[in-house]
Picture 1 (cartoon, rainbow, N blue to C red):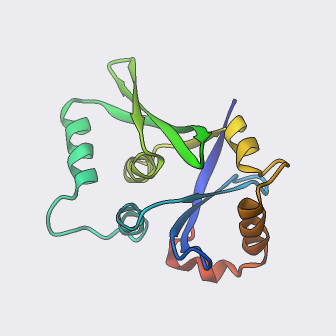
Picture 2: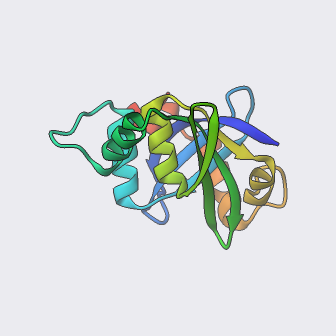
Picture 3: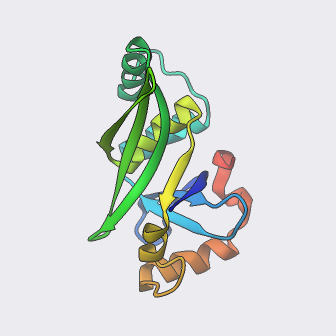
Length: 159
């Protein structure tokens, strides 16, 4: 069963120097860090900061296409974790019909943020990521580091 999560922040992993999107369960302690590329992190940062680029970016184009087709982003679900890679499905709704579109989690989350759609994570993904036991060394290291991080360190991205 999917669990709703919110984007808590965007930060740089102090060890790998890679951007991390931090998802957090609103009414709990579950935290899911998802490492993303620099371009994806930039798109998310722009959205979190409400920066409007002078020309449409790729995600703006996708939102325009969705809107022009009289559809809406219903929700995003992070569905799987395989070989350290997360998978997501973007759910679009048009005239009562639901369309499922395979998407990278980073792209799906940008669209969810831009359209105020909820973000969900399958419980199995939380389990596999180590949040509910059996943590990998990397997940354990990051979880412990996140527990001690000052919320101000997450920067302006905190929601």
